[in-house]
Image (cartoon, rainbow, N blue to C red):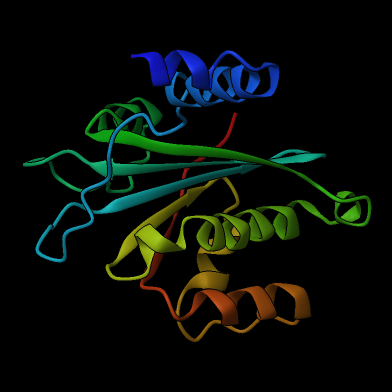
Length: 171
């Protein structure tokens, strides 16, 4: 007890202690991921890109629930998302040159950044990526050709993962 009191008496030590407690109390992980190799729970990467930011959410299927399937009815998709735990979220501000990308390029960049950000979870099993850009369904499907070199490079980086892209209409 005395050792603990001495540790946090100094100004620097006290600030360090407060910072550590703040990080512990406000951890970004909302649910622990099941990363066992024997687990059949699928991950779901949800990405959305705006004019200046990319938002990414990583979810994992709850035990005993069916995986996400595409439905034309948005309310059914919302119900399906309730079968998942939220694992982590991330936001990335676009750099100045990236803000000039078209909508398809921004969404593809979001998928690429999201996969790289969460690769420790996504590298060993198939997962679904969900976005609101319909052209990416064709671009990320196997064998589809694209003339856009940036998207082609990102798709080549992602091809080492077992990803299925699912289009979810945006608002």
